[in-house]
Picture 1 (cartoon, rainbow, N blue to C red):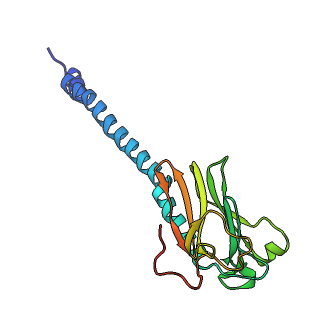
Picture 2: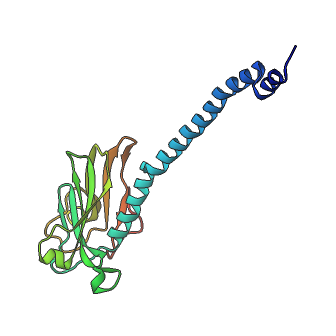
Picture 3: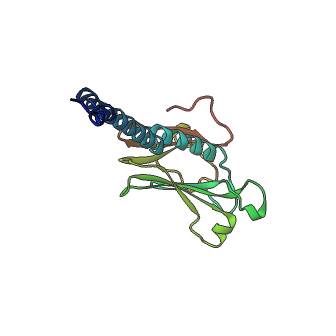
Length: 204
């Protein structure tokens, strides 16, 4: 004879089919949760990692702005020394002095041992006090770097590219070409300067 207590125990428990169903669903739920977690981590890493093409675009904009704003200024000569070039341009102003920009010196230089192209800027105060100035990295992972200058060669009586800038020149070159190589291959962007007498076309 089946008592009332036995009937109640059957109603309050789980059947074998129900247990098997729960057990079979656990791996599926675990897989879905894990897949979403991994996908979320992957998206987060991509948003935190800078694309080399983004770095290249930022470099192109900064260099184009710096060289286009270059000018002759007493006390800040145009200096070309090997794998570096320095010139007068507009730099970020000290907030206490007001204004967004101020006259200063911008230097592009290459550190071969680290494979990086750096940019240093100094305002007139930093130049006078011989301070280091503000340094930022423009490009990394470079395997080679070279600077060339486009100007009118008086000897050949024509515009030419040259990897040396005549020290006696008291003017700006017409353009500067930064030749470098990285994992994606060689590149040679050209940046025009605010110089007079620019020819109609600058050969690349």
